[in-house]
Image: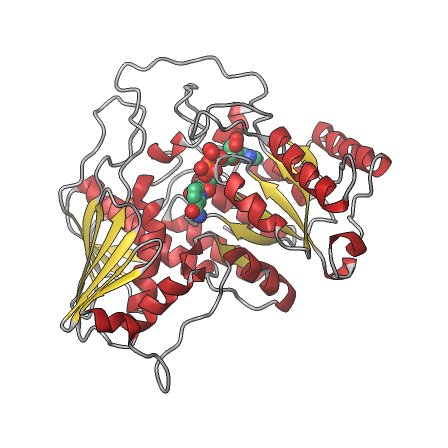
Length: 457
Ligand SMILES: NC(=O)c1ccc[n+]([C@@H]2O[C@H](COP(=O)([O-])OP(=O)(O)OC[C@H]3O[C@@H](n4cnc5c(N)ncnc54)[C@H](O)[C@@H]3O)[C@@H](O)[C@H]2O)c1
């Protein structure tokens, strides 16, 4: 058996553990919550969801899934049993706390003293092997997004994958292949396309209310943590944490507390930093406003800053790049203390989109009427609800795999230009960097065995 198959095969020990967990559930409370208790939806219409990754963002996503009566979280998976050490001091997270949180929610909802419908496991392959799981929510660090998505698609699961869609451009391309080959629904988890005022702003731009578009500014937040600096030392791996599986397809590396939970975001082996973190949100809004069919053909550094050599952290401390769209307007993506935000600048005025509102100059632009023959954008008032509806209808949602990939790709190309500190020319049709072999090689990265894109490569 080759290494790929070895990774895809679930070990006998994991299988027994997962079967034992299922057996325990059957002994305790019913595995499926009766529809009469959870809502009006017949069990056949209810979507059984598995959560993969029980860290910081799961505290946002899990409560959102729980709002939907036709969705039941049947299992959670994390390589961390339970610990502090996430984004904030008060976060105690991992598979057991999140399992308990979900069961307590269902107990309250059903008026019972306790509920054991949701179980917890360590190995996501055990989740994918379960026949009762219809869909997975992938909330792991970015270096896992592609492998998990591809294996979930092969296992016939629909997928809500947190942004960005992969660590590299190649990751995204392989995710598209798998999702389309296996006819799965994938929603990329960048919720701004399900935010009504963002849609309104983008429709105004798309329909020319700003006149001729000249420049777009896309803001990303400052880094909220600093690295340990050069000279950092290896630390013992905490008990209850499967560090090797956390690393997964990423290179083998000595453990340090600032490497994993939440702060992986600042290390290039696992993330593109704020360029792909906030950048996926703000650049996704830019693309919606200017038209998803347009894509920049040039990328250039504009004074990005990076951590000191030898630091554990390796993503930009200051994001600053420029991308040129073929019809002449430029995008400037930069770190700004305001965090997420987009400014569209045209010959007739400007529109600013923040997390809460739209502002325009002149003020009248923001209330201009969109209608008649104007282009309209996909209406999704809630990103999670939209995914569940699409699982039932088998139609693409507001942010399908191709859309998520193209936004992630824009961010990855910005990172490549900032790293190399030179202009990158890009062919958006072929998704290839032109006349620069060193830059082109950065569109993909090797994966540590036994992980790979699988049979499709
Ligand atoms: N949409 C948004 O607004 C938003 C906001 C924050 C984060 N995110 C995204 O969510 C993802 C997770 O970010 P986070 O802040 O929650 O990180 P985190 O480190 O707090 O949590 C990630 C969890 O995944 C677990 N994990 C790692 N490898 C695993 C594996 N092989 N199997 C099972 N679990 C594994 C970790 O142990 C950890 O508990 C990132 O991709 C990030 O970009 C999205």
